[in-house]
Amino acid sequence: MNIEELYTEVFHDVQNFNIDDIPGIDLYMDQVTTYLNDKLKMAQRHDDDKLLTKTMINNYVKSHLMPPPEKKKYSKDHLIALILIFFFKNVVSINDVNSILNPIMSNQFSDKDDSLEKAFNIYLEHIQSSETIAPIVKSYEDSQKMLEKLDSTSDELAVLSFISVLNYDIFIRKLIIERLIDSANRNNNPSEPKDSKK
Image (cartoon, rainbow, N blue to C red; front, side, top):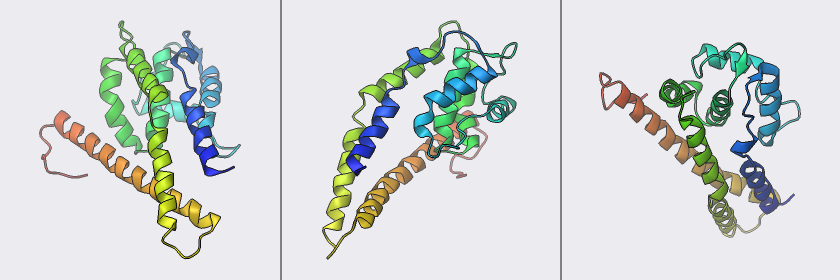
């Protein structure tokens, strides 16, 4: 598969996620893991990778990343929380995920206005309408221009060059995310010194 086909396939898989796919009825644990592992399989790198297990979900509840199920059943808000946890934990630490989600789970989880569902739907609409692919294409083109400075190139160098450009972009975005989290934590804990860095 060439690089252009690869990133087109990835974006297609991610953009096919839809809030209407999330069941509107409460589910038992086995149903939750079956449903979410199927919906998130685009992130599965190897056939035996575990994306979401019963143990993980139980740990998220014990860690207060989300409220416990009611009568062993998980609501639509639980599924939304699990999807958010899944995406966030692949970029930042689980402590940072807790910092991001704790205020939301305290205020918007299972509220009568369905605000968590509405916010998640807006996020999904953004993903589906986003021009995210254009910067990736530009990164690919930039990586190929870098190779023009070499006397000879190979497929391996082309891949390394593209990975390097993408990795730098991810690195910078991750630093920005971590600093936003730290800033929000300082704002929520005014007793902490403003110039402290974790």
